[in-house]
Image (cartoon, rainbow, N blue to C red):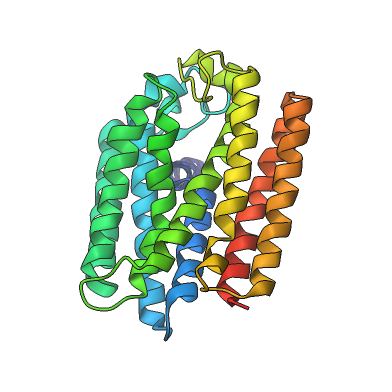
Length: 300
């Protein structure tokens, strides 16, 4: 009897461990934020809400994002072992084999692409598949070669917004100018967001030969200046929907206030660069994006 209980407990523990590992492979919280961006953009663009489209966009977008994140972890398994922030992931710990993780990611990637293609429109499916390829096969290997990788990675990072905009169109799918503007905001946002993260994790990244700050000198004045400069670009970019008359003055004022708050924090960091202020800037960028996206959604 004790053996049965013991075996059952071990089986349950094993099952839970595997489930938890697969969940971690998806980077669930990041995936949820990506889906939020895509759905909010859909609501912003759509003239009429189709809730089946929203459901397909949410599930398909999450599956595609999870596949990209998972493939990234398979490729970087040995490098993740070297870094404190990633050494507890399921691949470095050996909880999942390469085969198990690959099959899981392949199913998610194919499933997400098909969902987007069939239940929103074909262009959404194409963009979803492109985002996986760009993230896993282009951005991931470039991280050890050039700081330019962040620019490359910003494309798949912003594509969920474009996918949300395309999902709101009919037929094969269309890329509208308003959709491109929303894509551009999220594209530019990633630079101060990610560089702030890379600043306070730079020593850890260096263990795996990841040099993700914009300057070859790493944590230097040139990096500080570029973070500040792209914060200015973000402020300018966020008012373009108003310039082209897609949104009203209230939405624009919210964007301006958020942009100025982010720029102010970037300026403080520029004057006194340290890890603590980089973390504050990173947190400001996390708040900035959903607030701006919600403000633009109202079009008021």
